[in-house]
Image (cartoon, rainbow, N blue to C red):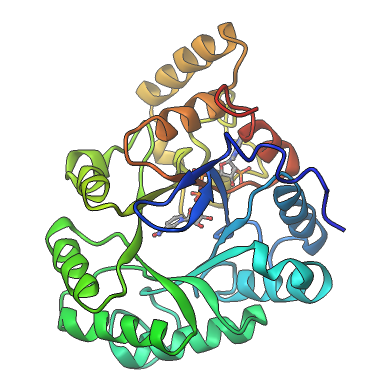
Amino acid sequence: MASEARYAQMETFYNRCGRSGVRLPKISLGFWHNFGADAPFERSREITRYAFDRGIVHFDFANNYGMPFGSAEMTFGRLMDEDFRPYRDELFISTKAGYNMWPGLYGEWGSRKYLMASLDQSLRRMHLDYVDLFYSHRYDPETPIEETLQAMVDIVRSGKALYLGISNWPLEPLRKAVTYLRERDVPLLIYQGKLNMLDRGPIDTGILDFCHQEGIGFIAYSPLAQGLLSDRYLNGIPLDSRMAQNRYLKPERLTPELKEYLTRLGEQANSAGRTIAQEALHWVLEQRGVTSVLVGVSSVEQLEDNLKNRRFA
Ligand code: NDP
């Protein structure tokens, strides 16, 4: 049974997603790391249940999340069967296709063939009839943009996704996509891009402003720079950390300059009675046009920390 108090923060914890009928929690949960077959199932379950009990109704996936690829969606399929089926209509589930997923000619990028097959696979893994949001995970410069976008429109028409999103596309193709989708009455709901205090790409490229002006939501991924923007690495590299895995977060990132910056940030945050992670998430959420931040966590304690914010607590 989910907590009866899960929507206690209705007034402060949700933002409207662009000019749409959808509201999303300011903190959403990402399943890239910590939810695959390589993670303990009971911990994944505890985190997911804790999130939902606190009003986090948006869970974000991609075909290739988890190790091996696809296993985060499979974990969620099991959670749907065991815990979440009664709450399906309270959840906003996204998945994506774009990166390398299966061998051969049709397992990545932006062809109609790949996108359609990938979403069918995701639905089977997650034990769902439809996702709420389907993303193109990256821009494919070799496939005609119309092919990618028409496949996405047809996915919505088929009922397998309710809304469309775009992730990591540069501004110019994004502009074309917005026009194309609008003309077909399937307006782009949201853009997903990397935004944090150390990486301000969507601000510098104008993508965040563009989304704001066009009434498109923006959801920030890696808002803690994969954990760099926390107290995790203040005293070295913990053995159970993402950096210790040396795959997506390399120890080279931890330069003396960054260490100094983090130490200063930690002192400022602590003197205000906050943590670095809380300050970092607050910074992203304060940027004009940001709807939500997608956090990854490896424990309930981290999520608890991330949910402490001066605008909603
Ligand atoms: P974050 O920047 O939030 O990093 C998450 C990591 O930070 C955790 O695994 C944990 O590291 C550490 N952490 C989190 N909270 C705390 C805390 N309070 N104190 C200390 N450490 C903390 O996000 P991710 O990089 O994981 O990305 C989040 C989501 O964004 C993904 O799950 C995915 O849904 C999406 N994403 C989308 C991409 C795209 O191309 N569209 C690309 C990347 C992500 P540790 O594990 O070491 O404990």
